[in-house]
Length: 117
Length: 112
Image 1 (cartoon, one colour):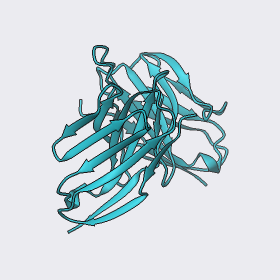
Image 2 (cartoon, one colour):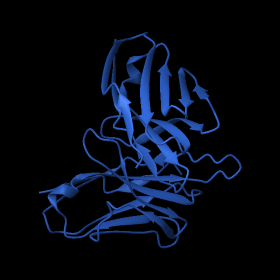
Image 3 (tube, chains in turn purple, red):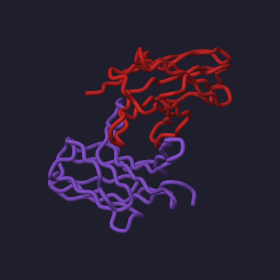
Image 4 (tube, helix red, strand yellow):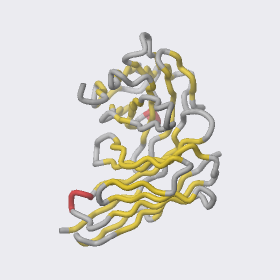
């Protein structure tokens, strides 16, 4: 297990199409996060899973966005009816809760870059 | 709403210099703070995590400090090397929830 894997690395689509990104976290990590990053900005939180439960969702996650983590392992992020403003890098991160210390070190994947034409 | 800022936005230094990157946050009710490194077109790599009860953390040539009451953290890089060139981001996790709020980053260039 070499880290967090994201696919595809780059997706070019036309406005109005649906796209789906996949994230495979580190196997022993029970927490999974999706972030969105645009050029020159820090990542913005989208949603968080603990095991298969989606526990937090940002207001950025409009009705066109949906995320799942069906068996508490991999996760998918789907964007329906894409808009040009959706163009960004979509980052996945995972972590394992360290209840004794409270530490929560995030391990990020390389990201999936979306370009909407 | 928590806001995180980083100064400077970009920094260029000659190899061998010591340098300090600054991070400020508006709400001091944080659980922890992390510093990350991001290389162009890639994901983020965690460098240091400081719990809210800690004052500093060290890893090799990196030292991060936290002053929660004033809403500030600094990342000190000793004896900088060209391989340190990257964007450095800080992120705070608030006391409630699992959301990490990121700053915009400082783009560091270390010239050989």
